[in-house]
Image 1 (cartoon, rainbow, N blue to C red):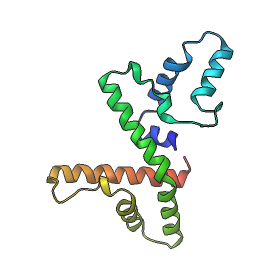
Image 2: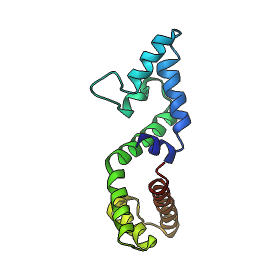
Image 3: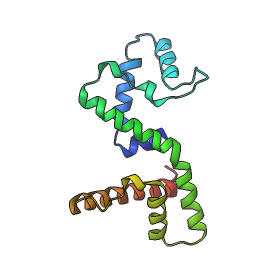
Length: 147
């Protein structure tokens, strides 16, 4: 799920660079680098992988801090909701529902906070509609192609 969230946020390469520079590059010995990599990925602990632990917050600019906070929120969303959204999609497909109906079901069940409201200006409503449609298309592409 982390990989999908990073892909959605266009942050995968930036995250890999950040992790490398913050946690791995500092070691010259290959064994130490391997150990650091396992630690960052949660492979050497009972706690497992925790995305927030891979962000070195001590050396972030305000802009980067905001960027990683947003990415962390998306990682959390994917970890908590992706399987439910995919299940809804698969069941709806088995019932031969129309794709537009499936999209609407996903939007209303899982993405309500992203949907435009009556209080939004026309411009904001249009922007939100574009964003939510792009996101649902992204999710469906992930479901169909098992990315």
